[in-house]
Structure formats: C-alpha cells, structure tokens
Image (cartoon, rainbow, N blue to C red):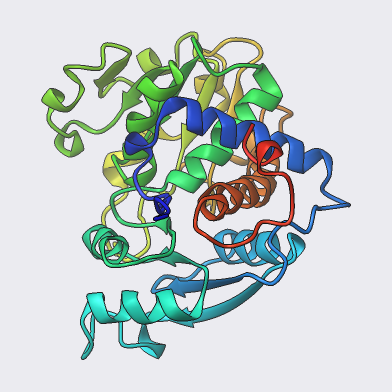
Length: 311
C-alpha cells in the first residue's frame, strides 16, 4: 500500500476541513502543554534554514522534542541543497535519513521542487511567497481571543509580503473578511482577488481599520530586503488612533520581530489589545499539530490512536 505524502506547503492547497482539524488539535495540545503526548517517539525532523530564525527554530525544535522526536538543524551553507547537488538528489537522500523536513528558505519554488522528489513530508516554515505555519498560529490566537474567525474582519497594514499573501490564501478557507491597506505602488493586481469578494484592497489605512476585529501588521522591511525606504509606509503605522477605529474588542497582532516605533507604537504594544506573545507561543502548539498531521499518514508509527491526532 502506498501512502499519500502529506506536505504542508501552500495553505490554499489544503482542504478547509483539514486546516480546521489541525487547529482543533493545536488547541488540544496547548491544554496538555505540560504533559505532551509522546506521539513522535523515535522520529526525526531535519530543519533547514537560509534565514535567521528565533520563533521558527524554537517552535519546531521544541515541538518535535516535546512530542518525543529528534531534530537535526542545518543551514543551506552546510549542505548541498541548490549547490553542486541537484534538489532531486538532496530530496531522495533526506528521505532515506529522516522522517520529515522543515525548511525556511527564500525560494518557494525550491521548496515545491524538494517536495516533488521527496517520499517524506516537507513543511514550509517560510518562503518569500508564503508563511502558512504563521497564519495557522495567528488564526489559533484569534479563535482563543474572539471565538471563530469566520465572519470576522481582519485588517492588514503595510507591505504585501509573504504573511499578507498567506492571509489572502487562507481567507476563503476560514471565511473571514480581509481588508488590505497597502501603499499604492506596492499593491498587487486586483485581479488576484476577483474571485474572493471577502477581500478588499486599498491605500486608505483608516478605512481598512474601521470596525475591524483584528489589526495586523509586520515589519516594513523583510529579511533580505534591507535598505528599502520606509517613508512610504509611515501612513500605515499602527497607532492608538488607528486602533480606536476598530471595534472595542479588537486585538493587535504581529508575527515578530518588531521594529518598535516603526510599524507599531509602544502605546499599542503595551495595551491589553496586543496579543503578540500569545501569538508567538501558539507557533509551538500549531507546529506540533502540523507535524502530527504530516506524519500520521507517512508510513511511520505514531504512538497514539490516530483518530485523536487531527479529529
């Protein structure tokens, strides 16, 4: 019997029901954070990086180890990936040594190519095009603070980066409204959203913030884009005045790292509306559930009743 490999690369290619199941399992695992089930005992995760990392490295490494597994961390410079060895050969060798691969790398196509040649799950921990694990943690946080994300208004401020793109991909999966406030010259084609009426885009930050349930931003200059002017983003800084346009219960989210005083002021960060540390912690619990989902059907032995893993 051939197992269907469960990769976690593009959130828009994963069924909505599956994403909901992963989130349910994330909440369950958080409740048991001090007594984590040893469901991945004896399994190994390769963690590949070409970018600096705090939350991704910590969350995946701790997640795998708390569930009983092992990790090996490598940078792109320490291996042959994309160098003198083909991606196909690297994928096939990794498939013989470890049970899954987590990769945080700039080139999204390389991740997809790696997955196409792998007989083990590949997890996209961040590329320049998407950040699906982060969005899952963000939605988990919204569910904790506000209940179901369905029908909520999420407002995004700043660049159209990998996080914003993944919020766009996730909107039809979870049924939330998404209002993007992006500088005019950085906006993608509106044609991208023509089949998603719940997504709107403009350059007016105040309009996007009005009656929002969730205010979201990110660093204006992403890693690898240092030197980009920040002047164009100044109207999109999240301030108490911008937060006041949202609903009274609105929360503020940022995936971190934060450049305080640039994309958000300390006055916002120091209010109860800011849930950035809950959001960061939830990376750990979501990562556990994603690992369980990917590995459950991969042919390895999960040390638990599979029905409680993602149901």
